[in-house]
Every structure is written in C-alpha cells, then in structure tokens.
Amino acid sequence: MLNLALGEDVRLALCLGAHCDDIEIGCGGALWSLARKHPRMEFVIAVFASDDARERETRMAIEGLLGAAKYQLVMHRYRDGFFPAEWASIKNSFEALKALGVPDVVLTHQGNDRHQDHRIISELTWNTFRNHLVLEYEIPKYDGDLGQPNAYVPLTTEAVEQKLAILMSCFPSQAAKRWFTESLFRGLMRIRGMECNAPSGYAEAFYARKMLLGC
Image (tube, rainbow, N blue to C red; front, side, top):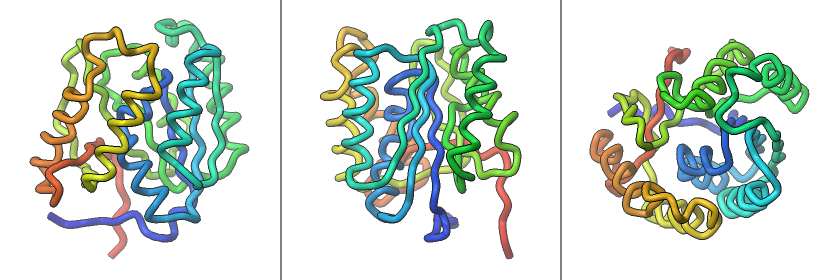
C-alpha cells in the first residue's frame, strides 16, 4: 500500500470536535503519534459543546495525547444537540480560528455522520477551510453510520494503549454509557488496522475527499 507520509513541512494541525472526547475517540492515536514523531509540530484543538466539568476532562486528555507539544485549546459552550439552530454563530467561531494560523492539515468529523452536531462541524470545516488538506475521522455510535474510509494512519501498539488509557481515565462523565468501552475502541482500530495491513494490526481511519498529489 502506497504511503503518503505527512512530512516535516507539516507545522500546524487544526483539530475540530463537536463535543468533548470526539477528537480523542476519532483521531487520538494519530495525534499522539504526530506529537512524538514531529516534536516541532503545533496543534490547535477546538471543541464546540462543553461545560466546566467536560472542559476539565478534555484538558487532561489533550495534555496526555500531546505531551510536550505546543498547542492551543479553544473551548465553546454551544448547546449539545442544537448545532443546526446555531449555524451562524458557530460559523463566526470557525472564522475566528483563522486568526490562530494557517493549518497544514485539518482533522474533523466525517461528512456522513448521522449526529447533527457532527455534520454541522464537518460542513463548516469545508465551508471555512477550502484550500487545505482535510481528513475526516469516524466515531462509533448507535447511529450505525460507519462507512468505507479511504485513508489510514497505522498505529504502534504503544499509541493504541496510550489512546485507550487516556479515553478510559480522562472521561469519567462517559463511564455510564454502554458504548463507551475500551473493547469497542480497540475493536474499531483493529478492523481498520486489518484493512490497511498495519504492522501492529491497528490503525485509525479517515475520509480524504480531496487530496493534492505532487509528482
């Protein structure tokens, strides 16, 4: 399988999540790996639905994923489940992100996600960042909307275990949810690892709608 690696010229990654824990579930392993392989890389993490308790969880999780890497955490308090009704206000928040730098890669929700908040974030990503590499991550949930991704990030065993440990320890507010389990997150990474023949057997998967290939 052809490996189109993110090189040393990738300096800034913008990570967008509708809710606290979305980014960690969808691309936590990739972020952990990038932060350690490219120590000069910077990150902007933007979450749009939060409260005081959930923000504390997110800050702890992002610190664990990114370690010593330089990052900015942008937290908003939009109402969970009502993003379509707040489209204009959320759009203004997206525009404000442009002042934080020009990202080399944008990580966001996949466009066919059936959760309305996730879809709005994906839609506004493409509406706002039109000339960027955008990778859309996936989140397993009751909606049953997992699809056929076309881009993969193989993960080392260490990256997998670190992601799982952070998810299980940093988000006590989600512990009562039947789907928020280590076995589910590990299982999805195992399936994606099989699909891309990852050496460790594990990977995270993304949707790359548009990609510019240099010859």
